[in-house]
Image 1 (cartoon, rainbow, N blue to C red):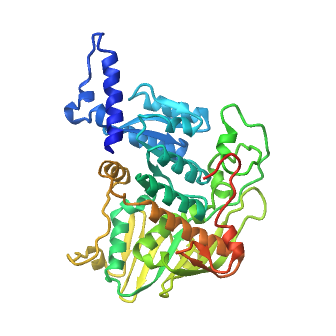
Image 2 (cartoon, rainbow, N blue to C red; image 1 turned 30 degrees about the horizontal axis):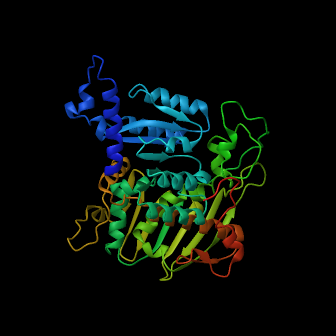
Image 3 (tube, one colour; image 1 turned 30 degrees about the vertical axis):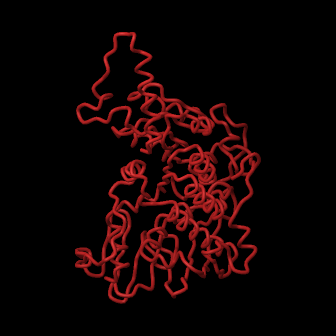
Length: 429
């Protein structure tokens, strides 16, 4: 933990103890660090923004850590806040809840925040957090648009904060092994990587209604344009509505696109060409791709085919194909053209990739050491951007050229307009 933040937490803890000194007090051993437990003065205070399904899972994970203390939660839904406060208060008393994330960020005892809101909120939540002096764990995709992602990169670096992207495959030894095999030539010359992820969905018509008292609907919408409330929209279905997410091509795609880039970084440099097709919903509120079949070509001729599962024979995961062999990796499994490849003992001269075995542990280690995490902001931004470039190509229905240095398309003004979105007043980056 950064020294300044550590001192804030320590002062807060000692002040509370001093205030109660006049009364007979028994300080539990855990507060003093006995029995191998972290003393309260050295715990990292966490705030959690967005505590639905994924966010609630993070709360549970952090409650299981002796070196963390959940200080507060924030969500437009009162009930989601209440449920998570009740869980946290079984371990720590006085956990706070807010419907407005800015109130959480004003708390001095919050050293780091976990952001698990919809994608349209990620940039603002993250930028507000680093400006408030907090380190950040932000779920993927890192942003709704390429322009928002670049603003996040600038803010994280300007304010000197840690940001771990929730692309947790970077903390999985199987994915690291696959990428090290590629980068050190054990597959020969790799010219092709095939990326397959789950496809999207069509949604039924959702009747508008008055928002229930449980939700601050204006805060839920945030920077997205105003549309009427529906019961189904503010659930898992928002993933397939372009106001809040670019769909599975982005929010699932970022995971495996990130691994493709980890193994073949040339895909995120210079100018790339992207083209392909997609099937979109014909009615209902969903307006993101259901299936897609795209091809991205780097300047050196390396090809990434990026498709929804089983399109063009693409299974789930990432398959690197070289002239001496191949390796296919997905969550929980890795296989190769030769089993011996998976037993490779890397030479001292080989390039070694960042080693992390647990994404939360790595985040906490980096808060203390101030080194970049396994999934740093730049990697998350590039993986998000390449998925969005593929999406734009399918919407324009033609091949486009994207310039990574400028983060703009080449002579494609219609595509450039899709790299950013206006934000609803009063929200601004």
